[in-house]
Image (cartoon, rainbow, N blue to C red; front, side):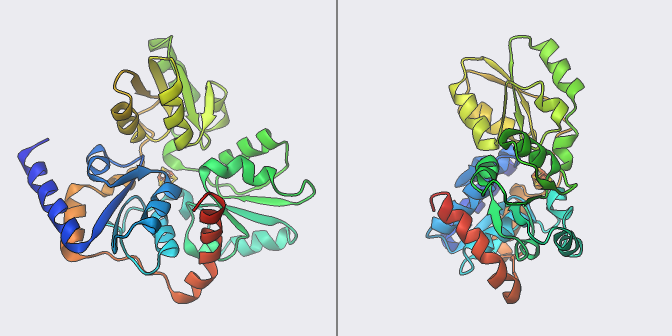
Length: 307
Ligand code: SF4
């Protein structure tokens, strides 16, 4: 850490106290952001931590749809995303222009929607799910119920296989995670023949086929703690390596591909966090008509998952 970083961290911590603020960060964030966060986890964990906290100000180390979900869960708090350019390609792949047309094609389908979507999209869905719940949420719906599973086609394909259900999929994907190819995993396996491979549910099927475990980010964290393997090849966004390595210093974590990087997520850094705390900006606002319609599915997800 440089002297400049130390000075910035000191200022951030002082401002956090003065403004009654906390920082919640995603597993995929830069290490420097994870290290100063009050909480590091997945989008649901960030939302729950923010909603349960006494803080009046939430600084989000994530992307726009994560900050918006937090704002839906706790509208009374000031939610700040240090750089509004931190978007999510997956959430951008589904829009309110196209969703109603798709729903008209399948008028009896229950629409189940990933947490990483916009508030506008959440106004049009029946259920909002987190990555940990993706399989169970489908399993629990009646066997004869038509299901539209949005927006990640590869997660949907995995859930369909695991549940034996036919799902109506959306052609979305997480662009950093689909950059991880089977050849990358094979190459890492050749370099580390004793390593176990863990792959995220958003990976392409060819990568999943090479994995010892296909799971969510929380599932990866649990696997990392419990496995006897000393080397673990990780097929998901590279930021999680920092978290896994920090929590398990006796093991070695190897990114399946350095191309699996969410560049927009990395726009939140020490400088942008400090600037946002100094200026209390950019604040996330959700128009009232959208907030009212989108909030119930987020509240239901929090209640269902233990909130
Ligand atoms: S890693 Fe993928 S799902 Fe997560 S914020 Fe980036 S684009 Fe969105």
